[in-house]
Image 1: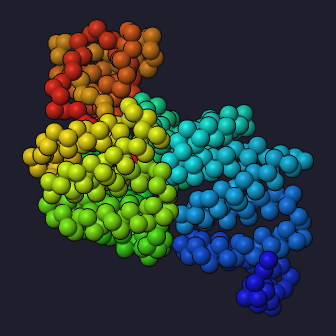
Image 2 (image 1 turned 90 degrees about the vertical axis):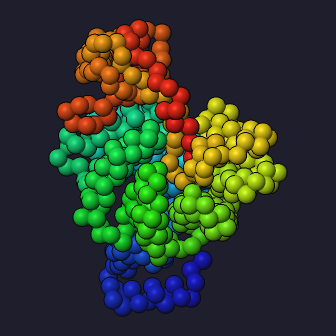
Length: 472
């Protein structure tokens, strides 16, 4: 049903662009989208869809494209359930078409997977991404930038599932394609830099992470300027590194800068805005200002529960951080209530062995034992910024007295690098005859994944190097 106001707007379109009102709406919607005026873009795409369905019916491929555009905007606005409705509508149109466009269908599967990931339904997301990948490899070359995007998205899900080996491997596939492809767009490269930075940050390689974040921000500012959503996300991420480095005033300044953009473009009830509320709360918590921290966490919780529901990893993280405030106030009974709520969600959605669940369990044990952390930054009960999956990987040291060969394959036949004496790497997985490691290439400073001999002398470093912080 089209409203009276929409009829009036359609009349305006006919008077301005009488020969093609459909193209008028599509062009105006695209322009609004580029300017981040999402509500205006949504209205015009809805009007365009009404014209398409009246003139061509639902079986036209252009109708599917408009449905996908509407879904994309609703996803940006945090209206995930409604976005899924439009993506599924587009998928049905494409699959019922006489001449199927496999790439278009794969793209819709990819987009549906992205929403499922945002909803914390990671296994379902991975299933859709796998469908998209299976279709894409049959239709396009492996060095196509679209493949890079898909590998990047798959990596992100593995990251949230705690499978850091698979995550980094897929990020590297994505980056290799983009850097070797002259037609790759800067936005895709910036996104991959950002995601690699996230893995490095989870490994406590903060300077390396910050370097990648800054590279990503530079590209985004060059393309979109400093008031774009992607720029806001970079400000938020760089702030997170500053927070980890205990540079709290610098972190707070950047979080505030990110919040201004999110509230301006997305409003105060969007999940991304809530994430920054949480992160600002984390800064105040670590500075010992628990009352202000709790205010920000409660603002986060009000938005997160409404937008994502009570069964979501982000909601669990907020519960955990509120529990941290009660713990810091020595209200252990109050802290336990929030920690147990968080743990129930994490064990249900992520499994008992996930770093997030293990971190919350550690907090519960601290409450039960009345073991108070030595400082607000203590790992047992520290506030955790959202959106930064953390690793339980351990640092290993080559103390064999010799350089260790790094191989590309599990059988240790294809040499790709060396692990020098007394240099460290991260162990991702220990197999029967080899170790999967994340190591730094000395010439470039970049991190790569490889295999080395399990018995060659890679020795685990002391426990204090282990990274156990949790996040959503």
